[in-house]
Image (tube, rainbow, N blue to C red; front, side, top):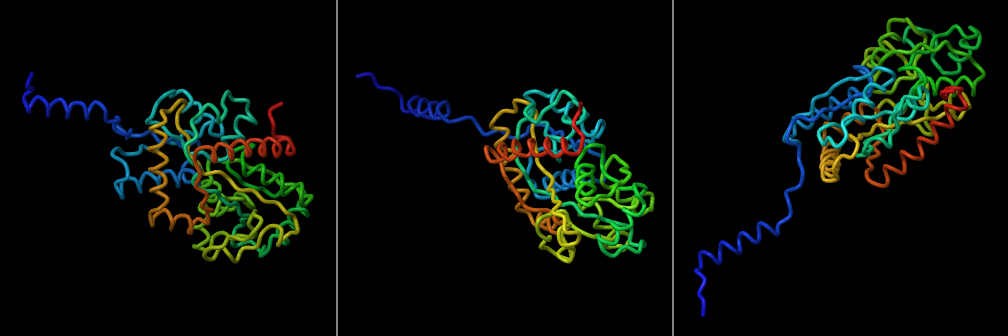
Length: 325
């Protein structure tokens, strides 16, 4: 009988185990480019920088996230940049609802289907704000003044034909008033201009104006949702329906997409990473301070939501005359 040396037998067994074992799960091997299709200081910018900071603080990623603002063309610059990174597992983008509005309004050759859905992190609120030094204590008082001024009152917002202008048009149509809409590059810039009295009102996200609210520079009049915000001092702000009788409501996406054809194991890594981010005390405090709605979703659930909201935005923009002709 042929005898095989014990050492050779062990070598064969161990080698066989390594060959049979599955490959190690994917993880980043170089810095991750984290694109923001909006300007500095706005809600998307703040959230992306928070995620990058949490990743470093809690050691959730073996490589750092490099945050890059590409706001040109109402975010088209950022979307087209990521669209061009086919198969790249080290490029992601944070999306707001300009994911839908920018291609629908401009005709830019881009669709959310060009990217790889990763996860929805939250839904963001909108609030009607005025400067704290104005006499308006309620939305009804302010809208009465807007009506009297007959189109000369300035509503500031992020970009043209994006969420802020859509919401402004919805408010105009519901209340029979007219604003002069003034676009800015980002929500942070919008609120600064309200503080500086260069515009009369805004529909900023809570996180974009909270620091100025705490400093008594701006005043929230109403929230554009079907119910009041349930956390902190935000709960004292009435809904638009309570304040004006008009059921005008709108929530904005805060989600993550990857480059086209991102490998599935990379997508799985990002989903797991982002879930860990949302479980940190830093994230939970940010959500409460900024009055965001937790709404984590991935996979088929996320894709279905995106499909439904693309249709919603097409309908809203058609009603507001904002679709590219």
